Length: 146
Image (cartoon, rainbow, N blue to C red; front, side, top):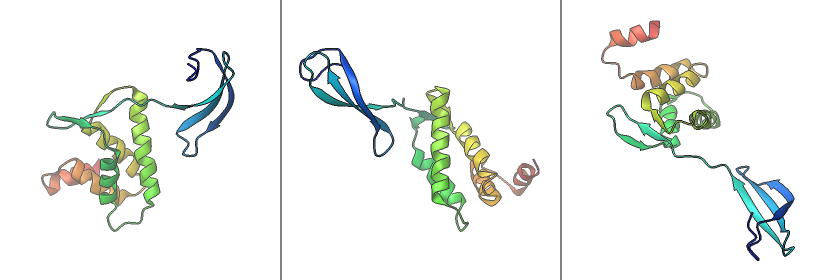
């Protein structure tokens, strides 16, 4: 780590603490050259995720869109929004962990449905009916039978 005072490349960590929000680590360092102290912050670098839509267009991943779609599926149902937020974070982390920079809306929809089914079957069916774009009652009934 380069010292902001003298430019020396050598420093030692004196103290490390997690930040208040838990997303970074605060490190107190001491320069080996001039013995002055300075603070650095380490954060995880997350690469941008691109969502490939059904029509082939691409747009930046927006976790709020996933959260809002789940909230709509739970309309007039009991749900803890923090649970939906947890699911959204879980999906985003799962995508980040694959190291793939592009994800299809089909894959996102499957990930959401996989997590909604054990939580609430009615919300799962609502979400699936929009996600699968059922054209008639027959296709909807075939999905339910599966």
